[in-house]
Amino acid sequence: MRLSEISAGVVGVGFIGVAHVEALRRLGVNVAGVVGSSPQRAAAKAEAADLPRVYPSVAALVDDPRIDVVHIASPNHVHADQVRACLAAGKHVVCEKPLALTSADGADLVERADAAGVVNAVCFNIRFYPLNHQMAAMVRTGEIGQPRFVAGSYLQDWLLLDTDWNWRLVPEQAGALRSVADIGSHWLDLARFITGKRVVEVMADLHTFVPVRKHPVGPVETFAASSGDEELIEEEMSSDDGAGILLRFEDGVRGLVAIAQTAAGRKNAVSIEVDGSESAVSWYSEDPDRLWIGHRGRPNEILQRDPSLLAPDAARTAGYPGGHVEGYPDTFRALFKEVYQDVANGRPSAEPTYPTFADGHDALLVTEAVATSSQEQRWIAVQR
Image (cartoon, rainbow, N blue to C red; front, side):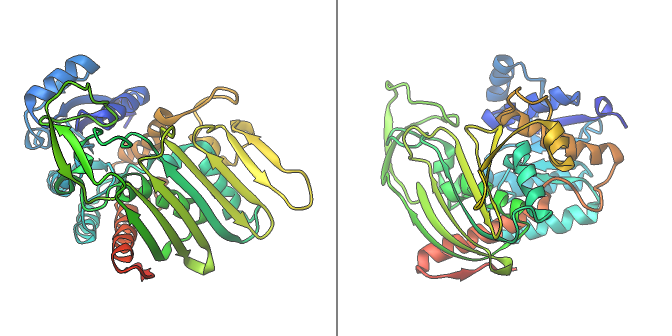
């Protein structure tokens, strides 16, 4: 089946839902329709963002036999039930992270997807900057020796002010964790992908830096700024604005990550470094086409993203020649390209080249251990 013969539907018309639609259109996939939190809001967003047909509900979308794949880009608390509805209808599913709010639900979705035999993916798109695939290839082939230490951060500033607001600040919709579940999960998945090692123990310190926030009565879209003239409601906060996490990976690898959504001036800054027994590699999302390679006894190197210079797995994710910078929107295109190759074949491959529900479940197990560690102020083993 050709990609142009595949029809997809997207649940969610916010920032991320629109990103999914745009990436699918770039691949030539037919985006047949979208679902919003209400038909009225979806219709307004569809007109503003040139989105396709608006379905009145998720049920109407999954009941349409013309829809082959459903993308879930809705608030976190409805992911599990919406994924179940898709699986029951035999649809392939791409779900934004988190896959669910609990690891119990995550495990259930993994089991259901396996039983249904459908393609299933979790949108850990940060993996799909080509140089992150290059780092993973270099670790896998032993170019840096044995990986020893992984360090980095994921920093944003869109929740710096007490008037910054979004559904992600509401535990009933987003879950008890916020910065760790929202952006920290991306970093943790990236560290696992690059090193090939799972996190086995964590020691975490979570903190709420803005204890009281003010917000309007109606919904506020992600990254949107307050207009300053709304009637505001004060609300006490319980979820984490930031975190520091010590990590123990398989085979003795150690790690450290800082996460914050209140870091002034950092818009969407991801950094990661893997130190090996022979060399080190380091990447920064705000300079995404440059990979630093560190050495002890000779000059350090900078590898510019150029498909002709990359490992085959990394070159496959690159969409443009060297010197033509690839950024955040391109990660969705690269991820969905891998997913839709399996969709075109009608089933998941034996070794998917994209993050699956199993990866999403593993991320839930790690973040649950992070929450417990912060509460109990001690090392916690990741339960598997």
